Amino acid sequence: MKKQQIITIALGVIIVVLVVILVRQFTTPLGFDKERKIRDQAVIAQIKEIRSAQQAYKSKYEMYTPSFDTLINFILNDSLELERRIGSFDDSVAVAEGRVYFEKFKIPVIDTVFSRKFTPEEVMKLNDIPFSEIYYGEPQKFYLEAGSVMTESGIDVPVFECRAPFKSYLRDLNEQELINLIARENEMGRYPGIKVGDMTRTSNDAGNWE
Image 1 (cartoon, rainbow, N blue to C red):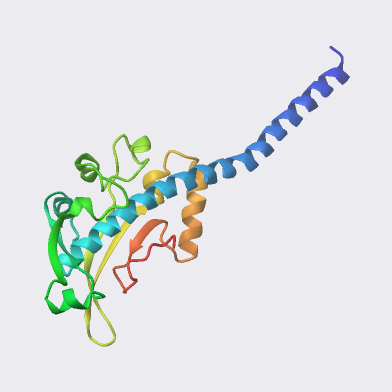
Image 2: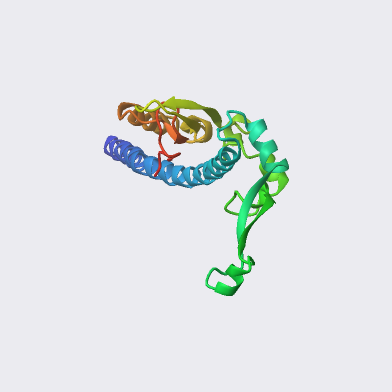
């Protein structure tokens, strides 16, 4: 083989390698971001259900719980007292006769707090972070805290915080992209993951994606 042919082949190989490297540089972040969005939405959907359960718990006990065991037991075995109107206040005769009134009734927590129908088996897995089992072999758990903060007017307000770090459900994806994502969030003073509520201030139970 002539020297010129060898040089030509070598240049061709170098060009192919460079093209592959460039393609990966563009496609790796795109692939990571696409999969991250899918997983973020799954985590957000679940953490919203946790928030709804915590709000229901607070409506009955005037506080949040820091324990998933307590929260799950509340969902599976407790009930909420609701109120419904009997009759119409537009009916003056019925009002005068006392046939228009509000009636209290109870409904199981599991039947009222969620955005969809949950089975008891799904409730038992409420604290499992979606996709976390891919890397770790078993589901990682949401972090849950609860307590109170004092407002400027001296009132103690119940607060809670539930969170799932990026590394718990993105760990099996591109390592460098995950490192870059966490670094960006830290630099901007944001929690590197999905979280709802806040233990340091009143936040109306807002999520950091909202």
